[in-house]
Picture 1 (cartoon, rainbow, N blue to C red):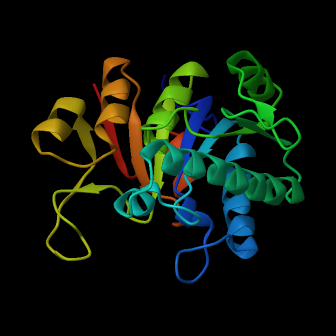
Picture 2 (cartoon, rainbow, N blue to C red):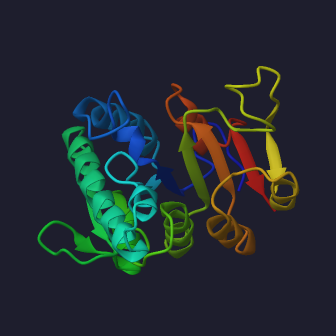
Amino acid sequence: MESSQGVPRYKRILLKLSGEALSGAGGTGIDPDQAAFMARRLKAVHALGVQVGIVIGAGNLWRGKIGVERGMDQSTADYMGMIATVMNALALRDALEREGITTRVQTAIEMNKVAEPYIRLRAIRHLEKNRVVIISGGTGNPYFTTDTAAALRAMEIGAELLIKATKVDGIYDSDPKKNPQARRYDKLTYQEALAKRLEVMDMTAFTLCMDNKLPILVLNFWQEGMLEAAVMGESVGTLVTA
């Protein structure tokens, strides 16, 4: 689909956000100012007429790995993480609603008093009505990351692009923070990313995107105008495609 002046290239996107994006100093907890900042970023994209689905992580509230390292059962640790994503989703919904954007939170783990159950067709209907949909609770199953949940939900809702929001402006051949000579890729094929062992997403999520030819765009969410440029089809971040 080609972009033309003023018309977004992508009609529907799935944005994968880390839980840390909501945290304040120290990288833990939920900072209302950060939530408000993110909401303003998302409002700018929503204003272009793009349908936005969001999957958010829980790293600011809980990391299952820490529990497992101390002897906690993996399933228990993962369910705690899934519940934490719902808390983040509610905080982000509140911030978006304050910006005047009608938002729905759906969750793969049923908790009817706080969020809708995740139902694919209902999520699509909300998007068609120009509502932002935050899909929380991971996949509803332990042993799967929120990266995998994002890839799965992107496929289910018919997103044309999966955007992984990070604090770096794309995928590099080495860590740009440690190596000033690190080279950023503008575009990669799935096979190139695999061959170079670039950590785009976890392997389950990456394979899911590759098998279903869903493009992945890695960009700096915090850089002004990046998200808008991405949905307009401009060359920003690193695009991974077939």
